Amino acid sequence: MKLNRTIPTVLILLGLVIQMPSTSQAQDKTHIIEIHAHRYAFSPAEITLKKGETVKLRLLSDDVAHSLLIPGLQINQSITKAHPTEVVITPTISGDFSGKCGRFCGSSHGSMVFTIHVKD
Ligand SMILES: [Cu+2]
Image (cartoon, rainbow, N blue to C red; front, side):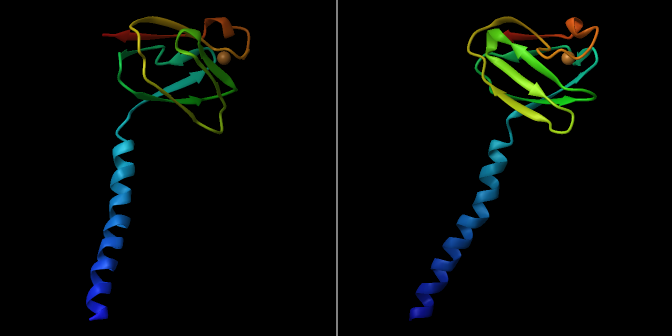
């Protein structure tokens, strides 16, 4: 009798454990956009997002330390070579948002510009 009660309990617990990976897979469905920073450009240099849609920007440096600074979207993220960083954003207003490298990285640092277009 006791064993008959134990087996369903174990199966329920296993079910919970098995469901956990599928829950994290659902979170991973966030659209990821990879942005490379290198002397002296971002690649891509502009992206278009949809208002209200959450995306993950994965920022990587191909050489020295940079940053991505977009004041209009409250983005200010360091980008180092060894450690890709991620920024999750959900733009709530449409428009064109200018950004740049916020960390001096060499003579043409000022040409490192980036634009996010947010469409309705
Ligand atoms: Cu830079």
